[in-house]
Length: 268
Image (cartoon, rainbow, N blue to C red; front, top):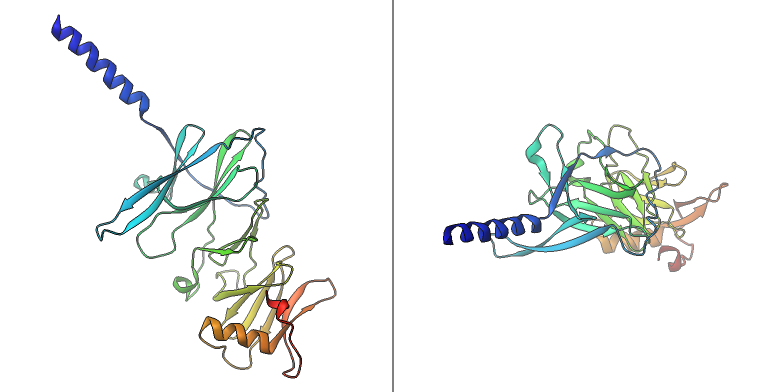
């Protein structure tokens, strides 16, 4: 009798443990199509997503924050490489809502390789989870230098690897027009226009500028190399360039006369 009772108790305990284990689902990301919006409303004040914080102690005793994401009651795993089933992961180094309805998350994979880890959108769409890759193939010589991951532009949005601009609040995604279609922009983002619609990248020989809503570009050639430090670049821009609107009302940064008085508000 005691053995039967013990077996029953053990069965109940094991069943209870199994019930408490979180459900996990693995998703294969799809490719982004141009100018998609991810601003669905799921009809409730509660989000369909839960961000769970985990503190991971590395061998160096450094504590790193990692996140899991639950969609409804299911922990989300992303298949990074379609050909490798072992590449699926549920660990993220970054997870942030990018719309007021809290139905879309921007996430970045937790990766200790030192390279810019892949980024994805997790979006509620038609009652299901939609996982979208933020990746475009590139053959740029200096890709390792300019594949910088996430770059947050204040409250306005995010640049991802010089290839995508994501607006905050309404979660709209714009592929950034490249100088060379085969390469991501081989330059460093340095500032955006007063209306926040034009992105300026400092390349080796020019200021490459993209008005992301229209894909209109302007390339301001440099007569001499730019300064090296960020502080010097800011002063150099303020002292040598000015924002001008073209006939379409689009702001582009252009070389200005040294005698012109520059309004510092143009660059804030």
